[in-house]
Image (cartoon, rainbow over all chains, first blue to last red; front, side):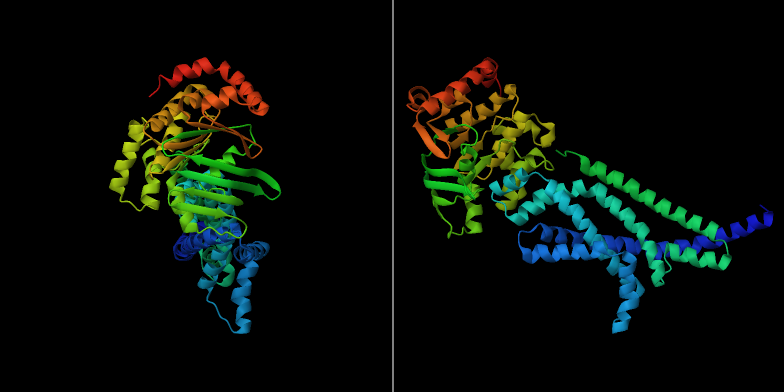
Length: 225
Length: 264
């Protein structure tokens, strides 16, 4: 490798850091956090609807999970961003990303929560009911807190998956972590350098998330029976 | 005080309780015995309405319930009624994510909407009573089986029930832990608590029971004082069952009896 080539790579690396950091802070992190939060709230509702005995609730919940899980995120995003304008509905890139990722998190995480709720022994329901608690009280005070701790590892997994999947928003014109890298790679003709840097960025943040997950597990893992 | 008439419970075509009549008087202890599958636990669960009977009636204090295919129970009334009937489970079913104190306070704070300071005082008093005052800040997984079960009793007592129901409270315990639980129950009986206990602890039954019920295939085959049921039953089925139980029981009897009088 010549000195000149090395210099070129270093220049590209230097040029890429700013835009990539900008894309991470402005898009990748906000899209991940907002979608996960909205998705988690929806996931609780979908899981409960799914577990309900009433087909008025469980049928729509199952239909929703079926549609979302059965179609690729990228295709859903293209339908909303490029498809809907065809029928006169224009959705901006950022809201499109939030919408699609929230719905996907809701669908997948609802299954995690459903399994977690089912894993809590029936005796816990009975114990709560035996002291006169209502369904909602047992759920809120007894079942969900225990289901939450069971769900920490798979939800942590889901969040890491989400963080990486947000790179798809590049394809609906958002300059997120990967989108910014793509632009710099094109202008510097150093895709190798720039994409490796992008990968290192993802690796760094996912490692942070893993650490956070371990801490949460420790905190919640106490006194499990 | 508790009056049950013609109680039936069926799951589909499987009949579990087949016409139970039972009176439990205030301040007495009733022991329910019988082979597994005889409907003992179902009967107990019906008394707390964790299971809703298919037919018959149940009356406790001011509460009267008629059961039948057309009878819908009001959820609110059921919840109020359950507070009057404390339940102690075989597997204790303590809330693992709450401390011992929080387990006992839960019903007071969440169901009764009592303020935390009062609830705490009451919970501490009840834990004192079952000999666990020192353990208030522990979690259920840090306790022995006998201690867990005593917390379960304190939790059931928290709402001042008119009657305490025990579903095989000692059968999941190591033999040496049985005594401490039975002692608490004995003490409660002495204080005039009304109790219904599904158990095979014959020694306990003999000592504490005012009434023994023998259940078989969803019917009451024999009822009376312990002396009557244990010694004078005319039913071959009852005598057979008792001799089998006492045989198995005699084997670890010595150890248990030693503990039953030494703990707490």
